[in-house]
Length: 438
Image (cartoon, rainbow, N blue to C red; front, side, top):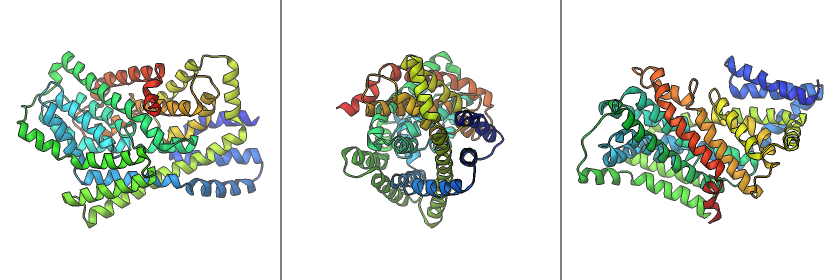
């Protein structure tokens, strides 16, 4: 068996390990070490590889941004910032048909601007918005579906942990990726709100109503969101303007959200310890996946599969757009049973050289950034695609009186919205890149 064949056979074996519930990081680590062992023929280079990959991976300064953004999200939830965002959005549009569901999506977008995690955004906003949607008379399916879709905004709107990992893997500028993701993220939120508006007209019986709030209460609810606005402006604005690096921005953001949580009474000795422990557990899980992916990707590099695949695809003479669409469809399928970080770490070393070898009429840096944003979008589409979308199960577990089939049915319009938006961004790269060109 050639090295290329060995690498190709490693993919179904890896998926088998994941299917039998071996942790994803451990699955990639075992496949990487096992494949390298077969190529080398003895264990000595494997031990040396394990030492070198572990050191080079975790000595990367940029990785320190991950626990800081995770801690920022923990503090934001403790400080009641998620509830303040939802109440402000609800105050202005909650009385309209479908308005409370739109408010939930808007609050997810706002919380995503200070969180950076899809599942964390969905879980946090689910705790806040589900009771309000139920009290307003919304059907269970549309309630869970809008929150599952809104949760994907957690990594679409910067800052994003997944974009940080993509930037490290492809050696791109983190700040430029954040900047490029901003417009597609806003388009996603607007698309979801339009979807809810259409849904409300087609199925008004599933939408509840609530009385309009007095202007005084609307203003008060809006003013209560000032910590979120201030933190977003300081962190993201500071990164974009170059005042500080993404890592420094994450540290400042964690400090500011901690102060906001303490001022609101949500942060004390116990919750501080719980937040640090939660951050440590999540960071450990992510870093284990990063290490496993690093060893697996080292094995793929030894096999020469990425280079051979890039050369083969370039030699087929296929349209670059056709190749891109095929890759994006594969990401949607993988997203049904893998988390976004694992997919990025597993596939980018293979797909990125293929895309960079094709001619899309873009400079290399713009092509890399455009591809990264498209991948980020379709990865999140997979998290809300039935039957195994992870966000669907996270939200549905909080609404035990809503059958999962109702959530599946109600999520389909949101998935359609995602496909339409992805097609637009594929057809018109300038939508993603025009901010970088200003």
